[in-house]
Image (tube, rainbow, N blue to C red; front, side, top):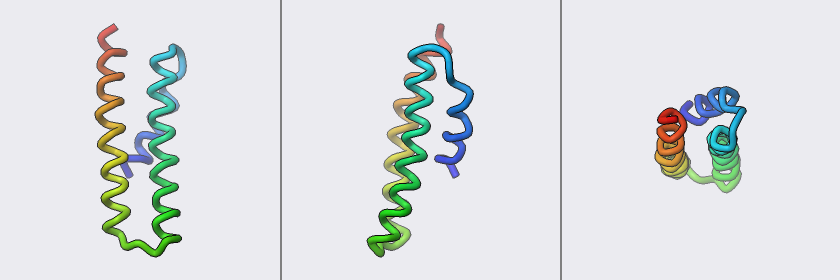
Length: 75
């Protein structure tokens, strides 16, 4: 659900270079989340492996986007 929320928030950022970076980070998060679900399901892993993968992806995106958003809103 968090990756879907990032995807819906990606459309808000469209103007400057920093906003494009934030948009791409949110889009890549959703792509990686969907890819990990498909890949881990295809490889017959259990739900715990998917949870660990998705939590890792989302935490990295939260850290990076938090820094970029703080720089953007500071301006």
